[in-house]
Image 1 (cartoon, rainbow, N blue to C red):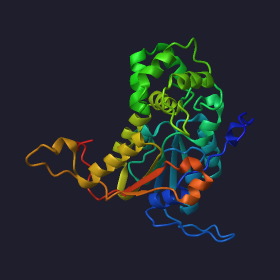
Image 2: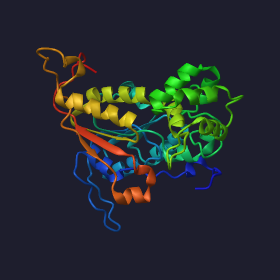
Image 3: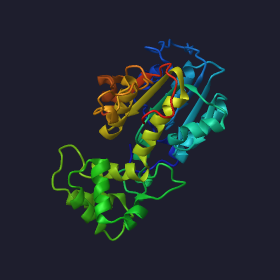
Image 4: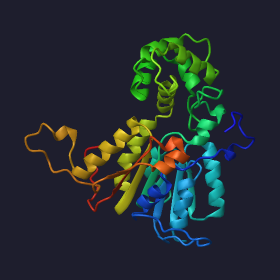
Length: 337
């Protein structure tokens, strides 16, 4: 792509990762029917489904092609530009309903629509290609722009505003916890010595100069930018809230399908599904007679991208799709998180 932004921000391209695998998982089928030339017939499945991270709608559009006319699809996103794309889709397809908010509001947002349970939930976590490729959003250390990094530019504090206020120690802790950056303290000191935080390229250059050990093939600012983005958007907290709410909102037999792109997210999803599929919780480990915990999900499965997909879309290389089926166990509000 060119470094300069196109005139219409909706023109940024996003290749949905693990597209067919995710849609098949959320529908509870092994695979989607092969489309023949001119044949648009899908599975024609009814029900209520949620795309918790609409993005540019790749997963949603494929899911809609498999749903019946009486089905409902609720789509969430923080990003105002993504919401504009979603609203355009909703204007053409009455099955689509749009929520401009984090998926952490899942239960409350659905309750406001009169929905207490759904047949399937899917989420594609992390940052989208359009957000990275649009330098003005501040996510990229390869394109210049304001040091913003907010998913939702209509609310909240930008990274630049936060950097003006934060102390060295807190910044170092954020870089270490959310970016797994081993040289966090050295980098934090260098960042806090900057005169201003107006340019992503300037910030990246300061991090580059402060970083003592560059990993081959990886920009030295990668982990620091990731950490600041995750922190300012409360990404991991939102993931935890979303996963916890999925138990109560999924009906028996409903499907959960979540794509992650880095270990911090994937570890959370893995541990969540392990706990709630085995009924085993850390707080029970030292008890002589652990209590019987409910098992809310079937044995989870994990799928990665094919070689063909990673060859076509290198950003898919780190993606993992984890999926599980909601069991018929009644949800208990007092259950361990």
